[in-house]
Length: 198
Image (cartoon, rainbow, N blue to C red; front, top):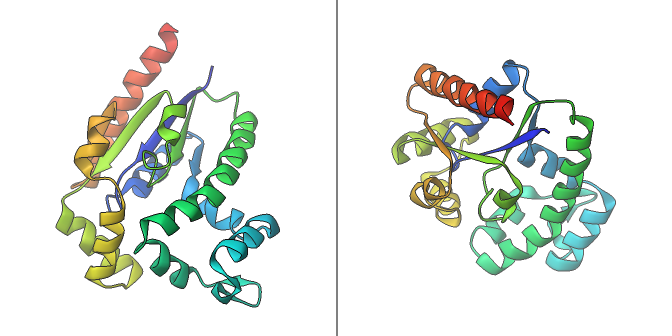
């Protein structure tokens, strides 16, 4: 039986770096945000977004992602509406992906809002990646060339580290990447032993 590991963490925590590390070890990784981006370009999802948020969010066939982000991160109800369009489509896509990797002992599903979406209930193990708030803000400012206020908006729309950690099986503190990788190796060793005992 494939063990499904849910990997999460707030924006700027470095969860994608840890996901890439899993991948470098030969473990299949599903990056939910990347897949959601592709899914948001399908006709079905585009039509649902147009119906819910209006055609003004589109320039021709292209979705104005920044404009949409501005709307949903300032309005919890609108965020809920968007999630109700995108999440079921991602869930269905992941099911297919999982079937394609059914021979793997372990697979990883990486998502920022694993708990907020309720998806965490579908996984065997949850790992949360944490990092100090200021480090997270700096990382995102460097990466996205955006403002501190916009990042804080995003952070405040997600669960806190404390909330995530309280529901997680393992925590990887990502201050020093080499130490974080060692912790990842340790967790993998435990999971492999448990897998062999099953």
